[in-house]
Structure formats: C-alpha cells, structure tokens
Image (cartoon, rainbow, N blue to C red; front, side, top):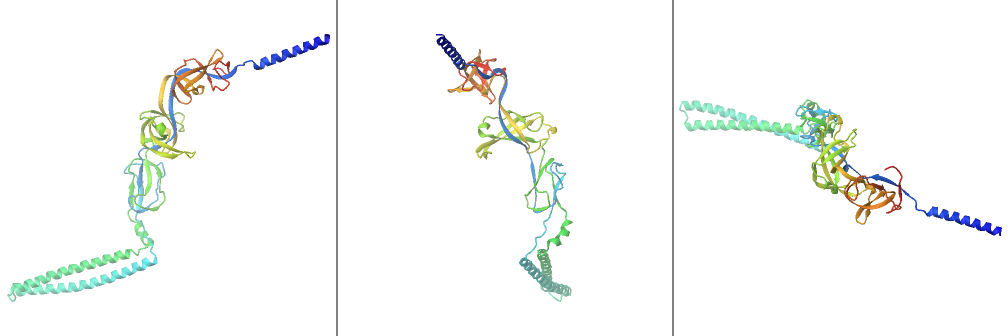
Length: 404
C-alpha cells in the first residue's frame, strides 16, 4: 500500500512540473522593441543630387587664321588681363613639300614664264624704237609746219602717230611687269620648307590677346603645331567671380523645383556647407544612361552661390552635392519614417501605451525619407515603435529595448 502511495505522489509531482513548464513556455511574453518620441521641430524635404561646378561665361580662344601656332607659354590657372595679355602667337604656314610630278610641272611653268618674259621684253624694245622714231617724226613735222612746208593735216598725223607709239610703249612695259610677276609666282611654287624657314622666322607673328580678364582654365593645344582657322587653343574664365553649380536632376524631381529655392551645397571638401539658390531649371531634358545601364531623363538645374569667397578654392568642374530644399517648416510635428507602415491605403503606426502596442492611423504630409510630417493622429510626446515586425500587433505587450 505504501508503494502505491509513493508512486502516486511521484506521478503527481511530475505532472505538476510538466504543467508548470508548459504554462511558462506558452505564457505571453513582452516583445522587445525600439521606440521613439514624436516631437515638434524644424524639418525640410530636399532633393539630393551629385553636381559639379562650372564657370558661367567661359571664352574659348581659337585660331583666327590657318597658320603655325607657337608653343603656348602659359600654364592652366595663369592670370590674364583683357586686351593686354598675349596668350598665343601664330606665324605663316611653311610651304608644303612637292612630289616629283608637281615639282616637274612647276619647273616647266617657270621656264614658260621666263620665255614669256623674254618675249615681252623683245616686244618692249621694238615698241620703244617705234616710239623714238614717232617722236622724231613729230618734231620734224612741227618744224615743217612752222615753215609752212606741210599742212595742218600732216602735223596732226605725226602727233597721232607719236601718241599711239607712247601708248604702245606703256602697254609693252605693263606686259613686261606682268610677265615678271608671273615668273615670281611660279618660282614661289618651288620654294621648299627649309628655304622658307629663315625668312618666315623673322616675320612679325600674329599676336592673340585675351578677350576677357580671368584665369586660363585649360589649354587645348600647348605644343607648337599647324592649326586651322577656328581650332580651339585655350579657354579663359573667372572661377572666383563667375562660378555656378549644375545638377542633373531626374525630370520627375525637376518639376518640383522652382527658381529661388534654397540649396545646401555640401561635400565640396570644406568644413561647412555653402549656401546657394536655384537660378533656373532648363526647359530641355536629355537622356542619360545610369551606371546600371538604365536610360533616364535628366534636366540641368543651375544653382548660384550665395556669399562665396576665394578661400573656398573651388574651380571649374569640381564635384559637390546639391541638396535643393523644396519644403521646409520650423515647427513641424514629426515622426520617424521607419515607424510608419501601410494599413490598406492609409498610413499607421504602433504607439507604445502602458506597455502595450496600440495601432493608430495617421495622416502624413511631407516625408523626407528619415522623418515624416504628422498632420493628424499623433501628438507631441507620443511614443511610437520603430521597425514594427510580424511579432508586433495591436494589444501585444512590448518593452523598450533602449530608452526612448
């Protein structure tokens, strides 16, 4: 009898332990959560985009004529003064080397020109003799006319003959000059680059002066070279007084931006952000392929600096980050964005009230990704659960894992 009683006691004790374990295992436990407090304070919504600086009015100095550009004696960053600083010099182009056929043709043209000159000179000598004879005949006719040996008609014929002879002599002289010039022209086609070097080195070069005052931004052609008219040589601008920022915004973001919107220019290398303002949003968009290979429609947005100074050392083409402020409030009721979740078509949060989670629908205004403006549903000082997971539901007991 005693043995039976002992077994019953053991079984009852074991059942009690099992029941206690099961009760402990399935007893509702507090869910540890992170909480934050709804507060009032300054808030803004920005459109962030990488951007770069550029000189608003830069001037490209180009070659005015075809010629030989001498080596540019400046480095990028050098100061230049409008209409004073000679930024480049050009000299005439050396003649091209002739191939065998062209040289033989030129030599034949020289011989032809020499023969033509000899012919013109012979004709000039003949005409000169005729002119001398006509002058003698005219003088003789004048004497005879004075002695009434000939009539007026005979004197007139002698004068006309003299005038015609003189005109023929002038024509012959002009023909000789023309043939001499032609000979010089065809001889010039035989000039070699080596023969032209000495003479052209002493020629007065074409001096190209700076069109504006500022700094040389870059040099397109530094070494001596043969350049065509219009070829760019260097670019001049003033990054200290004429600098702006260009941000390529997505077209969906650009429509939210207006001229006059404030801009925070950050990550430019300095200790503090710079202030800027949107000058204009260009009306023409363009297609750009992203790093992931996706075609995007982008729009250039021009940003002007406010209160820049030379100590910032920003130049043309420097990288910055532009944060364009499209909405701002100095006293917004705000909640962390990671406390929000969708409930149907509305926004909702879990409030932590007396150790339990309470689902609350809220109306949200502006949202910058980190914080959201609360229009209704919450008050300053309310505690909300951050990152609510699947174990958080309405009425569940919660415990803050850290101080709010």
